Amino acid sequence: MESNVVLQIHNVSFAYERALVLKNISFSIRQGEFVALIGPNGSGKTTLLKIILGTLIPREGEIRLDGKPVLSYPPKERAKKMSYVSQQLSAGFPLTVQELVSLGRYPHEGRFSQAAGDTQAVEEALRLTDSLPFRERKFTALSGGEKQKVLIARALAQTSYLLLLDEPTVHLDLYFQLQILNSLTRLCSEGRSTVVAVLHDLNLVSLFADKVLLLKSGEPIAFGKVEEVMNERSMRDAFGVEVAVSRDSQSGAVYYLPRRPQS
Ligand code: ADP
Image (cartoon, rainbow, N blue to C red; front, side, top):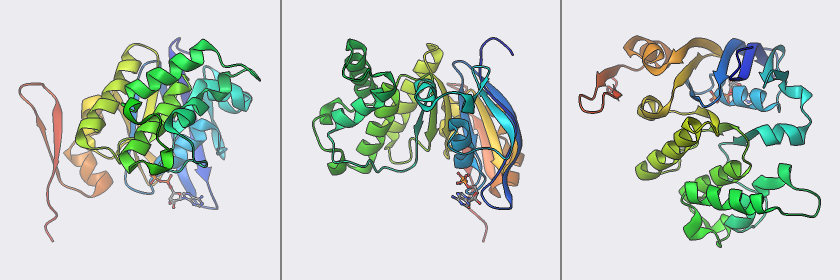
């Protein structure tokens, strides 16, 4: 295994019932990379995140985390290494933001103690997600965007080095989409996190992701750098959408402009 590979997905196939919803997926992710999962609705992105997390068991193939099968880690050890933010904005109990984010520390806690590291991790998570202003409020009383920030904060408070995020920016306004993704990429470049995120906005993928996996009907169409994977042809093939690809002369960033359907 290459030394800085965190996650290896090897020939993974999966079915909920009879039909395969993931077919022969293989790729690996190095420490500090931000990898985006893209593809049409129903192409298997959420299912793949749940397989990486170990909550779904592949029919074939294997996931290795730090060189060991993900299912070989006891759940608490797995939670020290990986955290997950689902698409759902619900959170069981009527807790305050601070209490909910503190729950992210559960894999690290001794039976009765709360260490200084716990407080520090919770504070940093609240700060990175701009959740400090509403830390005393009840989670249930927050807006969708505020809830999304808090659930990301809870995952950050877990201080695991692999973050699995399912559409983490979908409820956020433009400012906070950029802020949250910027914080995440900073954690990646500092080597403190590695991110796998389902994203739908091609421009956010282009701005923030190091690599992209493009799925269609459960099959991996391409995996690699953004510009290698996302082009006019692959976007047409995967999404059935005409997209104009251009480069911003000032920043050098590549932009994706979808065209209005003809009919
Ligand atoms: P995506 O995240 O790309 O939208 P999903 O991973 O949610 O796709 O779903 C992939 C396929 O698996 C879809 O056809 C979906 O209908 C099916 N599917 C998802 N969850 C279940 C489930 N719990 N039981 C049966 N089929 C499911």
